[in-house]
Length: 307
Image (tube, rainbow, N blue to C red; front, side, top):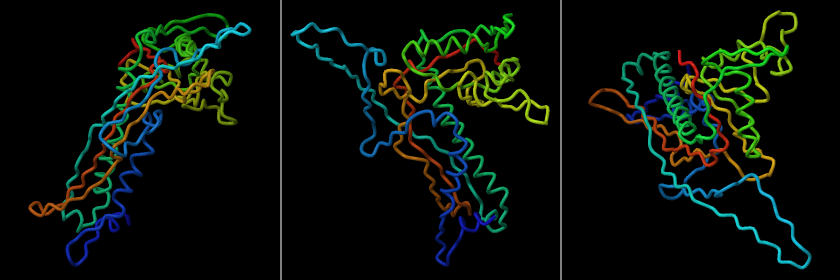
């Protein structure tokens, strides 16, 4: 693989050039992020903290009053609070021996880079999920019933699973704030339970035909459930799931982002020679903090099976 030669090239002075290494780590990391893209990225250019203004009180449902002829028109004042966020640092290091470089053992070096990228992906997405979990309002958290109503009018309840009623209930909670739910986030176990329901093989609910033309197989995973984009990731712990208004769309047109992924240092790669070990250390770091500024955009379902 040419990446190794491009990344680990020595000149006569013993210096090393790594033009492909940082690019490679980012290439391996960014496409695998599932939850981080749900937050708007906010880069801190000066200082160590970010101060994010947020409307206080009811922010999506607002009306104006009637005004009598000749009467003073009431002025609107929108109160704001400030959310202060301080990014923290995460990092990992890989030691690559000179023998690996000399022998050009491509698969091992590539595997180590992939492992570093995978660990970073899991850390970022788990931190975002933790932000969802802690920010969800008590009034927007409920135990899933596992109840579904089928097309013939009968109903069924499967304890510890997400039912059709749970999805519609979660959507209604968010819509009470004039927000538009657009995403459901869950562990593969919860996705397995949903895919077992007959509704989600049907075009009416999933936008996917019951059977692929000519193949006789049900296509999976289903891309949407009741208009909700699916994100299925093990970085959401089994036992809970979320319905989100991630895009901030709402009937009142208010500025309502779900939250921000505050970045002080993007994914960075440093390479340090370690002559005493006849090796080099590849150090991957980042400074960030996910913050939820619109908790009304989150509905958390709990009481789901964890195994």
